[in-house]
Image (cartoon, rainbow, N blue to C red; front, side, top):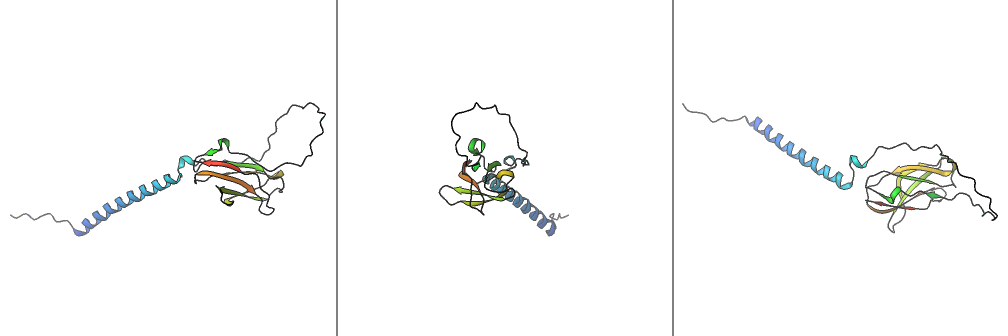
Length: 170
């Protein structure tokens, strides 16, 4: 008796090779994109859930000041203000608040967040915010570009802007 060698069907052999190549490509592509996302700083740990900004004003009791004999200074009204980020440093991709007041704008005016890198020009950041009563505004932004970046909020119609704040990303 002669024994025949066990020959597999060519279609089964091709299917096996295609499966092996597909698995290898899937692993390679998955590792590549995982590394790319980590390198840009975008991970689930860096993106906390957004909290809705509150528009309810808070009041605090202040003690009565003793009367003064000095003449009061001329009141020019409230000044534009932008509050600094707590600690002035955030991780890439971490959300941070932009809170301030631009008293020259009316309620509902759309304000543009702007960013400046080193000595470059002011560029529009892809975030706008609507002013509330008294020109107050509050929003949260994030960026994964690292380094020292300056932010301000401006009314593009009038050209009025808040003072800038410097935030170190990274």
